[in-house]
Length: 131
View (tube, rainbow, N blue to C red):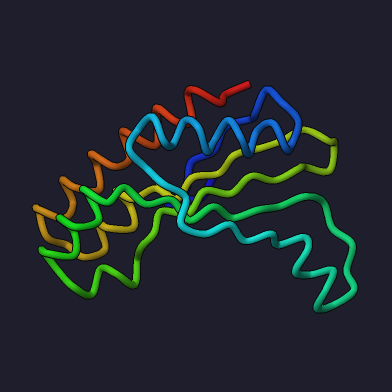
C-alpha cells in the first residue's frame, strides 16, 4: 500500500459506489468540485477501452480555507482526490488521498494537524462505503 493513499473495497457496483461516496463526502462537509472520468477520457483521446475509473475532486471549504490561510501554496495540493475504480475481478475499490501524508510534506505543525483532521473525516467516508 502506498504511503499517500488509503483504500477500501466497496459493497456496491461502480455507479452505486460513486453515488455512495458522493453522499458520504457531503455528510462530512465535502463537495465534489470535479469529476474526471478517466476511462471516458482514455477512450476519447487514445481509443483505449478501460474499466470504469473516476477521480472525484473533494473539497471541504472550511478546511481548505484554513489551509490556504496558513500557506497559499497549499492550493497546489488541493482538492482531496478520491478514486472510484473497477478492478480486474469486477469488484469496486475506493482510494482516498491521505491528506495527513500529503499536507505533512509542508512540515508545519498547524498544517499537519489540519491534515490529520481531514484524514479522519475521509476515513469516516471510507467506513461508510466499505464492503
